[in-house]
Length: 154
Image 1 (cartoon, rainbow, N blue to C red):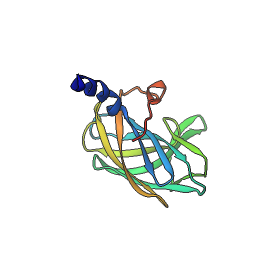
Image 2: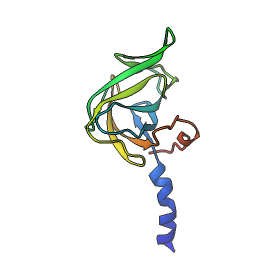
Image 3: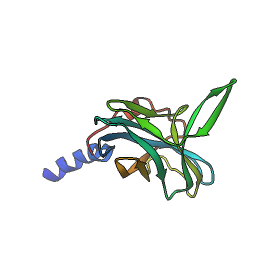
Image 4: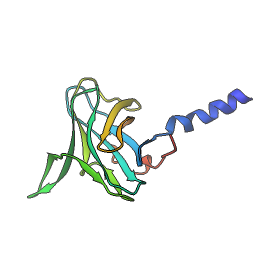
């Protein structure tokens, strides 16, 4: 009976997908499925629970040749992506890294991003330091909707 109860709780534990770096909560890091050799992207939510600002200043992942922080937006009717030096998270603020906006570029994927996999990523904050997270790889067409509302302590 206890083994059965433990098995029932496994999916909830497997879904735990939030992290903490100092006073910054990192919610649901995810990525879309992509083949090797192309550029992928990582998305997440940063929430500053503290009283001082912090900045996401970098990231790294073994699965990519390079990792950069980017912003994207429409310029003259064309979607453009540009690297950014850092992402500031003000006290009490929430910053979304999402398709069509701020995101983490995984340049030159060494392996495919396969739906259902977890991909290690290290985020680097100016004050909070480094934190290891895992990107949950979702379907190639995922848009970051309701499927991302399962944040739990972790």
